[in-house]
Length: 169
Image 1 (cartoon, rainbow, N blue to C red):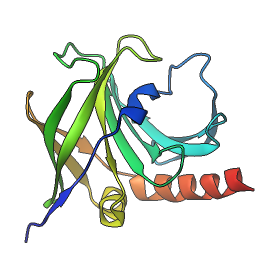
Image 2 (image 1 turned 120 degrees about the vertical axis):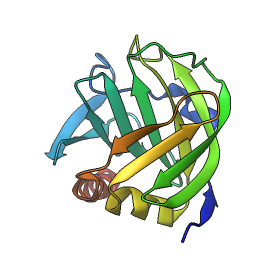
Image 3 (image 1 turned 90 degrees about the horizontal axis):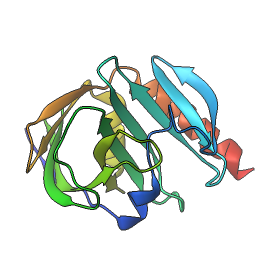
Image 4 (image 1 turned 30 degrees about the vertical axis):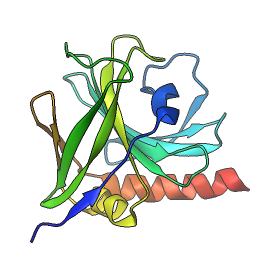
């Protein structure tokens, strides 16, 4: 049975970018779990997970600065028509659980050459689905859909939760 939940975006996410090649960004590797790298953002005192593939795609998940909202970002080095700060409707399926919302486009940012976008959610079910489901299928309004393999997210999210607890202390 399908159920539809709503995601939302925020202009506050515009400062985020991919970590794996961010250069002088304030990120320190905390650990690895099943292909995901857990980073500490020393400025925000929070942790995030990131996974990249051989095709230049990067998936990133973490918390906003106030830790009240989670985010999922997907970036690519491929040529796209995504414009910075452009918002578009998006539908995300996590093994059949549907979430609708908007994504904010990002281009350049800290890491040159990447384009993509972020969605935010304060829905605990969305986070649980990201951790426990196997495939995230994304259907943007203005582009072709794509799928992301979520293998290993459960262990990576658990490691990021422990990392976030340590940053509070």
